[in-house]
Amino acid sequence: MAFSSDEELEIKKVLDPYIASVRPKPEIRAEVDLFYKIYDQSVEIYEVRKIYDGRIIDEPIAKTTFNRTSNKWKVFWQRADLKWHGYEPKKEVAKVKDFVKLVEEDKHSCFWG
Image (cartoon, rainbow, N blue to C red; front, side, top):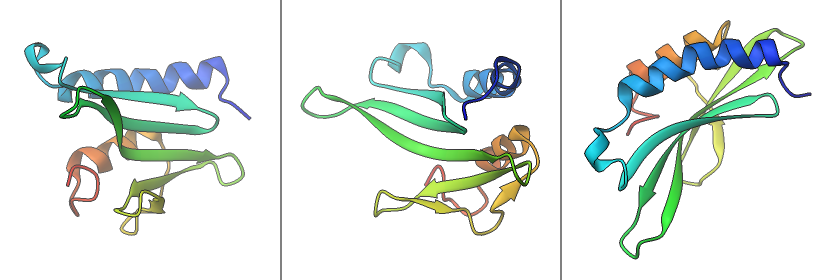
């Protein structure tokens, strides 16, 4: 089940300012930029990068998925196997702003490397 319009608005209120604060400088955004997407019950932060041959690729940074049963957000990071794995130090958070805080702090270098 997708997010309601109110839920999506709440997510955007948290993610928009965060992404704006960490995006690269405007002069290099044609080469590398940062975005997020909302789909199904998930929010994913990702980087868009131009690679050596001119192609544009998306590189996932972090993902959170809302579990309506537990009313919690599950936190994921992508390992070298290109699969999403539960973020071991904190697998769930209460609010999407807590997810953003984990990504921003990145104490274990799982999100930003």
